[in-house]
Amino acid sequence: MPERNRIDRLGGKRNHKHTGHIQRGITRAFIAAGGRDLTTPELLSWTHAQALHRGASTWERNYLKGDVRRAAKRMCEQVGRSTGPGRPVLWRLRKPVP
View 1 (cartoon, rainbow, N blue to C red):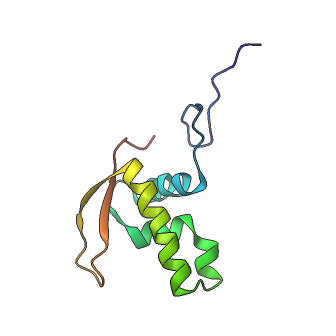
View 2: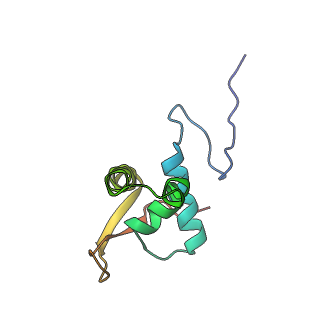
């Protein structure tokens, strides 16, 4: 039985590498942002909203930020640093959002 090309919920073709929940959250954050650059904490609020809502500890928050940074390095390019508190990294999506 030949394998059909299936379309995922975000309009992209599925391949052997499945998109994880962090990568889907990053893509959704950029769709909602309308093309502007996003910081790591903004991406974190889209990828781990439930953990942040329940009151994640500082250790857990830092651990989750590392996961978001690792996924963002694969999908985005680092544009610069923000001028906000802690100077978080600014990210821009490499591929245009559908």
